[in-house]
Image (cartoon, rainbow, N blue to C red; front, side):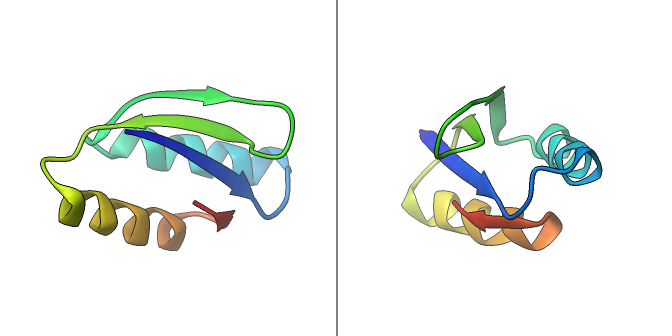
Length: 68
């Protein structure tokens, strides 16, 4: 699945914490830092829609994101 993420702020410490959270998630296959409306494009694996929903609920709580 492709996931677009927008950060609340683009500070180096927030971006660093977000990258660490991505590395800690086994569902994340790849992540790309973008320009434009979204800040990151993440490629995520999930066995089903419930697994994907759990991932999207968990990720913003671990970092300061505004939109997933």
